[in-house]
Image (cartoon, rainbow, N blue to C red; front, side):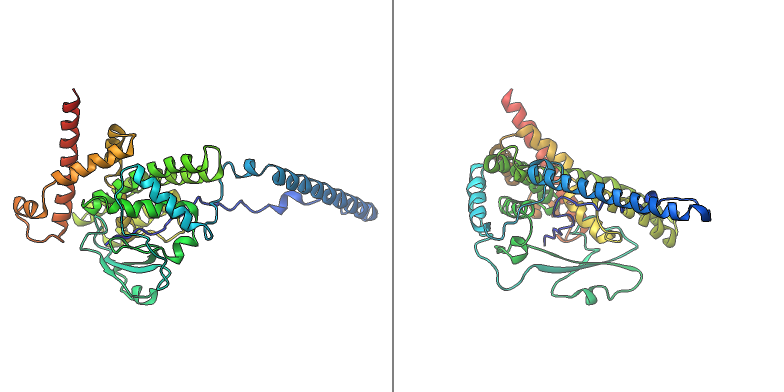
Length: 381
């Protein structure tokens, strides 16, 4: 199962602080002999202030109308794509072929059955899950928010939805085409990337993110041109997501250290929950998420995309920048990695869904990546 919630699907728009009216108060004498004069001064001053504000606003409106590109330069809004998604999808598929993608069954039709795919996760607060594959998380489908949150105090829960669901020949959903350009392009390339490999999710998720962000930047330049708003939107999305990956890993390590102390008996449960809440609040600010959004389930889900991201990105940097070469390299890794049966026997494991197997599988692929890279380097000497 793949869960990729749209925690932050577009460039964040931060609300500006409200104007402080206390800075605009007129202070006049309270002496009776000056009252009439004060009223005249107040009226004249107020009229003059209104006139100046109106003049200023008119000038600003004229400036924004004539200088649209400058207004959008720092934080461009993502263009609407409700009327053009079919043509955009065709262009994306043509682009994917140029970077070595094989054809997939994804997005072959527009779904009229559902707008998106809801999901629910539940997990004990006493355990920090490793990733979304950790059996400590119970994933439920076909459930509403009320049913999802119907748990005790000792349990974290998370209810959300995703626009697409991997490995089912996912269709285009109304949620996809009612969203933003950057999110649509991300979803198409990322889900099609999954169909290029048979790697563990803990490897495939971050790898496909690295590939997708590079592909988004290339597609933006080819289709829209360097200085266009669309180009900036796509590049900003990729750069922001890459930064947030690193923030996720750093904060997970802090929470992980707290849980290690709890399991050693050094930290009572109440203090653990209070301390992790402080870390969660920091991460929410770093990711520009609403307060209370983060818990063990959402953090473990994000870590599936983040834990090996930096290592895989460094490999892509060495193999690339040609994405076709990157795809070919990781297909070689995919073919050379140990099979699940070999890994179970080698590690004396008997359950492919156990956390021990999940971690061992990821470690084996990372070793295969390094061996393949060294072999490639030796061959070039």
